[in-house]
Amino acid sequence: MKKIQMVIAYDGTDFSGFQRQPGQRTIQGTLEEALYRLTGEEIEIHGSGRTDAGVHALGQVCHFTTASPIPAEKYPYILRRMLPKDLIVISAAETDDSFHARKSAYWKTYRYQIDTRPVPDLFTRRFRTHLPFPVDPDAMQAAGKLLEGTHDFTSFCSAKTVVTDRVRTIYRCRVKEVAGGIDIELTGNGFLYNMVRIIAGTLYEVGRHERSAEEIPAILAARDRTLAGPTFPPEGLILVEVGYSPWES
Image (cartoon, rainbow, N blue to C red):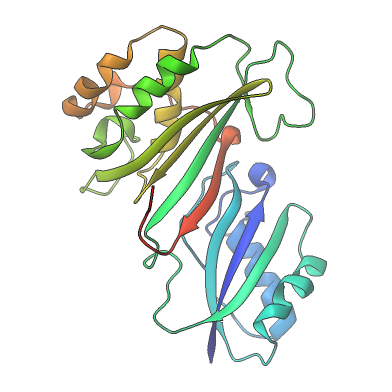
């Protein structure tokens, strides 16, 4: 048996998330079906994380074990011909037994993309949340800076979050002006359920001057979901990269 590590990208619009679900089109299920057709084996895919329905990825990492003699470097070429157009295998390599796509990860980078044009861009609408209003990126960056460091992010996660340890470290929060919009990029050692989408909603309110950046420490300290901003829609969220060595700023 050998272990294969793959980097994949996907347009999550028409998927019901990463995790396999009976009767639903998912990333894990689609990959496993393709690998079964290719190898004849019942293979289980393990991802670095479970993106929700409608969320995208540029650099999701996953692994699987197989007895197939197919060389690891051949998987991207073969699977690209077998998979639907909204799911691509970028690279594959054989890795050692100790590697685990989720447990071995040191950090992840997510980006939330907002389209602020009066009319949504037809060609990016699947990947940007359309909010046609001007925002103050400097105010958003000031608020984002206050989220950096190690905090209890209870105020910034869904009420449905089941984990009890909600302390996470944000290594970097960057707000960038791009053509026709704003990108919010977060790198951290882990993210709670809906955490990035709630942070995006909160920073957007700061950018609209509906709240001030100075409120962020109090929101964190309160550990109260009702004090943070709205949970933004999934289409603007992208898993950009997963890191397997300690974060270096």
